[in-house]
Figure 1: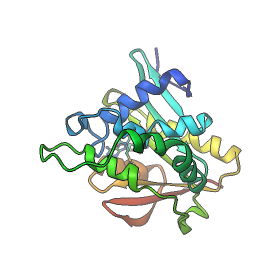
Figure 2: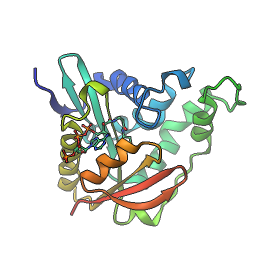
Figure 3: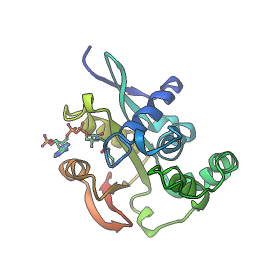
Figure 4: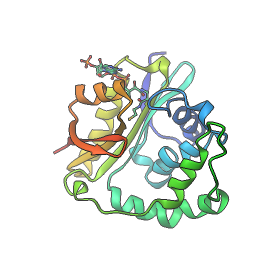
Length: 201
Ligand SMILES: CC(C)(COP(=O)(O)OP(=O)(O)OC[C@H]1O[C@@H](n2cnc3c(N)ncnc32)[C@H](O)[C@@H]1OP(=O)(O)O)[C@@H](O)C(=O)NCCC(=O)NCCS
């Protein structure tokens, strides 16, 4: 079966969480970095289709879901939704803890879950949407990332969204090359990441 791209279905959620972990260390497998395999997905995959399932698309091949793009059309209201509806349970179930000094990074993601606050950045005026995209190695470099972004961009244009942004880990050389290739502009540093933007209208 050739790879197909289709809209998200709720049954895709476990695959989204798996893929998020398998690509979660600047584009490569992060399994060894986390004791809790779901934490990355709680931050960077799960909330998007739960908040707005119409802006998640998946790649399916013979072996199942092989990649996804998740997005929100409007970052600030999405952050407020995270604050009211997503983070309270996670904060209660994942109390802040010390670095166990064993190389695992759960404590950092838990800190992010606790510290996250809605912030309305000037960047969001022209580029209110943001996304996360991840493909398993077997689906990479086959034009599927470009097709996923185009599919999402069409859905955002249909809603009149003028632009989108994302952060890419400065260590993710392949990811940065990809975004540059498909037309994203560099909007400057953002901690250990680069902020990139794409005009849609
Ligand atoms: C980054 C990623 C989304 C790109 O998707 P992809 O399907 O592999 O990329 P495509 O095949 O659609 O490539 C589109 C263009 O980008 C270029 N490109 C893609 N990956 C590249 C890489 N690693 N190095 C250089 N160029 C790259 C392709 O050559 C292609 O250029 P062309 O149109 O001139 O032929 C995918 O490889 C991936 O999920 N990687 C692991 C997770 C990750 O890094 N996610 C992004 C986190 S911000």
